[in-house]
Picture 1 (cartoon, rainbow, N blue to C red):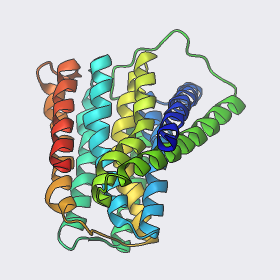
Picture 2 (picture 1 turned 135 degrees about the vertical axis):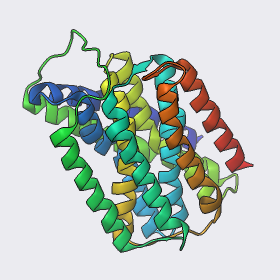
Picture 3 (picture 1 turned 180 degrees about the horizontal axis):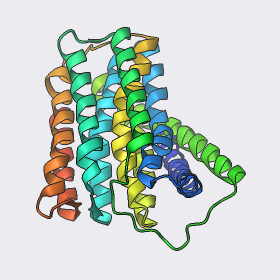
Picture 4 (picture 1 turned 180 degrees about the vertical axis):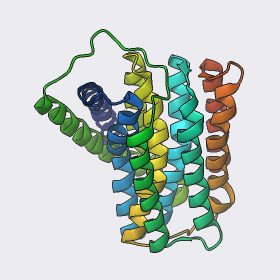
Length: 312
């Protein structure tokens, strides 16, 4: 009963936090005249990736490396297979050229680099973490200097430029609510999963990863409901890049991460690579440069298969 209460309160905080965060991101993009996808891939992605960072660092320091790795790999799969799927089922997203010339390739490079680092020796060393973080900074500098809007955005009529103190306030409250909500949700979910006697990797790759992907889901669903599709797509791609380069980079710099359960190397990372690659053909088929409800169903089917195979 206690675990269930943690989950419910966590969800409430996460949804509220997603709303506040989105408000501040939209206002900031208007005030600075920055394309909304850039705001989505920086401000929103940092805030919604904070739970993964907190969970991964704590898990690695506490001696649960599989929970740290499973959390990030599972979150990346959930961001595309669950969050993006639900987002595009609710409303189709039209995609522009810079999506497949910049954003998707960077996500694939980050995914392949991480898999290369971890696959051969089963470890993510400190120097490898430094390489990942350096790549993150290079990507951010490029993004802020050259990125054009990668999504056809529908500007709602109620967009208003908020005073700076309100933007900072919404950003702060939203970030704290997301962090607190994730903590409660993870505590409840892990408490429930532990009673079933499941391994750290399986808990990390399913329960914890979905828990830490809830902020992305909340922010993306609210973004679509408010017609802010640039933020919903940029947020998800950005979060996957941040999870690999920032979360695992920073975690492995603090303490090297060693794989304990080799199911992560023989199963999970290939699912992550598979769904990351799958996004590109879905953008072009069946309708060119658009993600619609059919694509959402394909992604959901992929995610369902992944969860079934992992638990099985």
